Length: 87
Image (cartoon, rainbow, N blue to C red; front, side):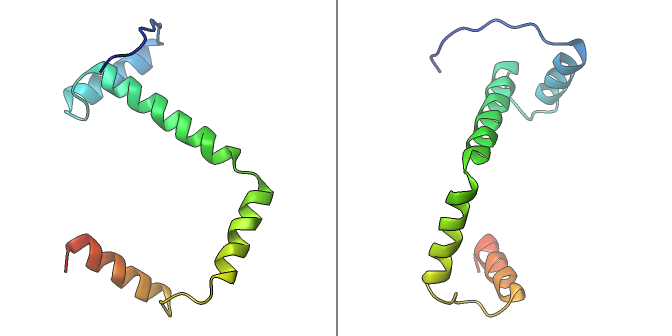
């Protein structure tokens, strides 16, 4: 991956957590763990940027789209299991 080099100093407890995640095989390198953390941070900021008006618009759009194809939450769960297990 190419990109901009950024040097930073982490508190020892965070650096240890990153090293432990690499040792457990969660990430190939410490750099991958840091990139993942920054991507999560960015996604959280984007989610928070959705304002109340936008959420209301989306809810209204859902209501106007008509009834869903599932009758209950259990039906939704069953469909999710079916898709997850490939049945």
